[in-house]
Image (cartoon, rainbow, N blue to C red; front, top):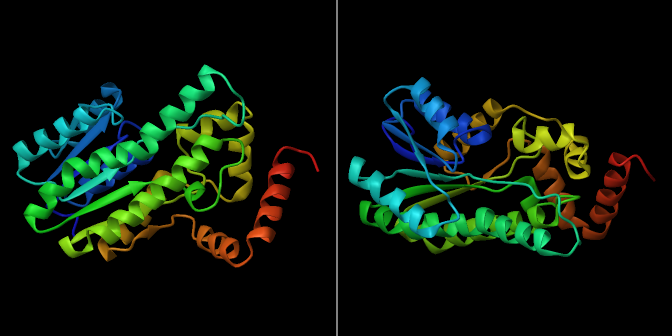
Length: 268
């Protein structure tokens, strides 16, 4: 697809990858970029910097009615949505501990990493079909192809996000609905850098697994994938090699991951 003159929605756009995508889409000549975030302040500030093509709105993507309302408002304003980037995310740091706080972390991860993609597709796909086609970009993570040491809800829900993107790509191909799934490793965003500064074990494992890249590099990879209509977006190309190694020898890959995680923790 062409980004120029497109109408685009980006969730989680107040910072990190979402903000980087919004900036890039405006720079590439998008007709309109709706910047969505649960916290309106940062998204509104960036939208003001980007000019009249950008607009900010406060939406909790785990609220289906709120997502449906967002899509309805954008369609009423612009008549179409060409690209919907379902990008919001979080980390939990939860492993096997029990209790209400751990359960809430599992529920929140499921809501943001899986159901938010479902709600977006439910709301926007019918309009895209009516328009003759459209594009969905769902942000998952390399954790959705590999794993996420130190954060079980993140690993599990990101796998589900990849699976849902695959399902969408198969189910709606005949309707000219294109799908890409974004699977980076470490990116220089608050989602990684703040836990890393606090010594979080999972964040340390991510940092040990490969280079930490900037959001501009992620936006470059997204642009390449969307313009070529490629399903898998790998800003870290080595993720493809890791994924292939996992498929070829799961036991060996698990052993290697365990050793890497132990090294990142400073133990054998």
